[in-house]
Amino acid sequence: MKRSDFRIAPSLLSADFARLGEEVRDVIAAGADLMHFDVMDNHYVPNLTVGPLVCEAIKPHCSVPIDVHLMVKPVDRIIPDFAKAGASIISFHPEASEHIDRTLGLIRDNGCRAGLVFNPATPLDWLDHVMDRVDLILVMSVNPGFGGQSFIPSALEKIAAVRKRIDASGRDIWLEVDGGVKADNIEKIARAGADTFVAGSAIFGDKDRAGATARMREALKRATMPS
Ligand code: DX5
Ligand code: ZN
Image 1 (tube, helix red, strand yellow):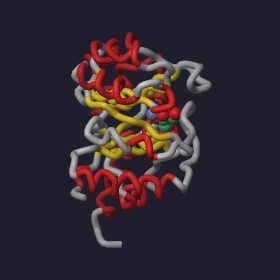
Image 2: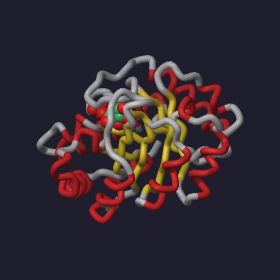
Image 3: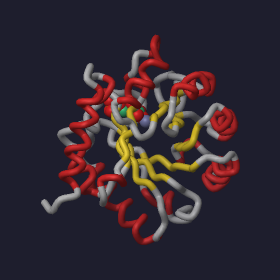
C-alpha cells in the first residue's frame, strides 16, 4: 500500500465540544484527511452525542470530508438529515437496520458513500450479498459507545479477513478501523490491511495534534516497507 492511500480520521468524540469549530480547524491543519463524526443515541449504544445540527454547524469549518459513524437504531429516518448536513460518508451497524440493502441504497441515493460497521462480535457474513453496495467497511476494534478504550487484538484477524474480501471483490472499498488506534499500534493495523484510521484520544488528547498525526504517518510509512 502506498503512503498516499492511508487516511487518518480524527474522531470528534474526544474534542472540546465547547470549541468545536476551532477543534475541527486545528486537526485539519494538523493533517487530518477525514473528520470522523460519532453519532450515539443512548439506545443502540449507552451514550448520547450529537446529531445533524452539529454536523451542519461544523461543515463550514471542515475542508475535509465528514465521515459520519451512526451508532443509532433505527437508522433510515436520520440518513437524509445527515446528507443535507454535509456528510460525505455515512456508516451504520447492520444490527441497527431491519433492511441492510435498503439502508445502503438510501445512503447512496442521498449522494453519500455508504459504510457498514462491524462490532467485535459481529460476523462478516453480513457482507456476503452487499459487496457491490458498500464503499467502506468499518471494523470496530472496541465495543462502540466511548472513546479512550483499548484496542482489542482480535480485530487484526478480522481486518485481514475483510482485506481478503475487498481484494477478491476488485472494488475500491475503504477499510477503516475505529477504537484504540495509536501511533504505537497503527503500523500493525495497516499491515493487517486497513487503509483508514480513526483516532480520537490519540489525536485530540495530545496538545500537539500535528505531532500526534505526524507520528502516525511515520508509523504508516514503516507499514509500506518489508517487515
Ligand atoms: C467509539 C467511537 C470511536 C471513538 C474512538 O464508539 O466510534 O470513534 O471516538 O476513540 P479512541 O480513538 O479514543 O478509541
Ligand atoms: Zn466511530
